[in-house]
Amino acid sequence: MNNYSVYLLREDIKTDYDAIAVQVAGIPVVDGASHYGTLFVKPTAPREPKWSPLFTPFVDKKKLGNVQSSAAVLIVPVDKRLFAVTFGQGRHLLKPEAFEERFGLLVTLNSVRQDALRSVDKRAFVDDQNSRVQTSQASAALEFGIDIERDLIRGIVGYPDAPEMGRRLSGSDALNFTSKADIPELRRQLRRYLRAYSSTDYKEKFPWVDQVRQLRPKGQRAVELDALMVEKLKIAWKQGGRVEGCWLAIPDVVDWARIAGFKFTRKKNEGMSSDLHLPGLVQAYPDAEPNIEFLRSRQAFAVDEEQWTVEDWQVYRCIHCELEDGGKSYVLSAGNWFEVHDDFAASIEEFYANIAKFPLELPIYNHDDEAAYNQALVDESNGAWCLMDRKLLNVGGVHDKVEFCDVYGAKTLLHIKHYGSSSVLGHLFNQGLVSAELLKSDKSFVQLANEKIDPAHALDLPVDVPRDVKDYKVVFGVISQSEAPGLHLPFFAKVVLKSVCARILERGFGEVMLAKISVDQDKVKVKKLPPGKKPAKRGQRMARGGH
Image 1 (spheres, rainbow, N blue to C red):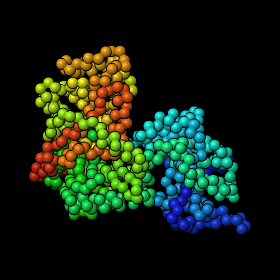
Image 2: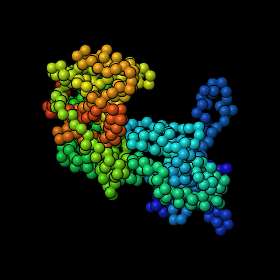
Image 3: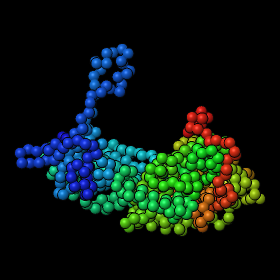
Image 4: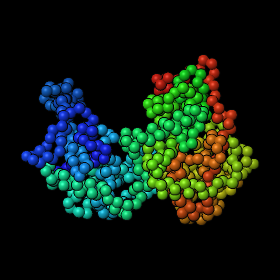
């Protein structure tokens, strides 16, 4: 049996050399009149093993031997298309934009039964963590714990229906397969995979796979979308940082108690903004050309009151952009481009347009951090609210310690967080979900909460579970500097919110609501640094425990 790894080259790749990233001569693979393809091989020099320094004090290094890697690509023409069959490190000989995305994934999905999967690689929209779930026996997709609204499927391993498709298929961008086919028989095998790639049968078996797909960072489509995004930013530069469908957001969950503001340079007396936003970037670089090189080479800094850097991120990672092109919808989130199916996007936007808005107007945010705001909200409420922020309940188990909410009153659990990326807001929504699930189903949760709650607001719920929580509601308050009406969340934050709302309501809660907490516009303005104050250098902040 032979193991192969295969990429399908894009249709506009017309010759072998169009796909090869290095200058190596192609070697025709022929047998008489039969031409099987062109082989590209990059020779590599022998080198010492990485582990050899462990033994060189004791052993002559000549006795430790050398290692040598190989890199080869066989380009095979099949029905007016070209395939790249890679060997060793051969994938690195290909131009990153030369091959089709999801070729192997679609071939595998079209070739295996729904209940014949062995492994699934998935990634949640709102974080950078990939996970691989495997089973000891062939199983259906949903048995792998896939959330069809919140997970991207990156790769699939399964057993094909037809024996001629191979013993086992593993697909992502590349297709990995095991077959008896040798080089003369390879073209026939690749033709089968080309037909499978062109099929739409997978949409019947796995209809949720196309809802969202992540684009390869250096792929052709991502490069084209970067160019469209840059055009939006050029408009923003002319309009003081304001443009439809493009803004900045903190890409990670941060400790706001440590953060006094945000900067985009280390210039003396630059000043800082109270939140991360596009007008601040334009103000820091008014004469810049906002191209991709600029966005990838500049940093956004979160700083404390003394201007020590607490966190920093590449500006490109902070950009959130939503645009349409060629009749399709695209989202740039945390440095990655995603293509969103129109029906899925429409269902998310319909949900978001109809989510209940909290009827009470919450106070304007003009505070140092969320903790100060929560305390002020309670202090000024004439007893309507009690403070639960940072009062952790030790529930044990998988959740360990959780917050009941930030502020509680009149059977309303209010969770509050600064605006941020989908990852940041997803963290807020999931906190609310965990608390709601525990209130519904955890036997000790009510007692633990009542130990922290002001007696005037004590929960009047039984110990026995599941509890009747139909009179309770969960409210998510988002602190937003935007003066525009309403609250415009990043697309994937809306996806998470939709899923969280459904799960909370399924558990019998009366309502899930959203509240915008506006920011005092005087606080939004850039604060100038005192004369002579210098931002901290990286070495200094490392000494003080910064990241």
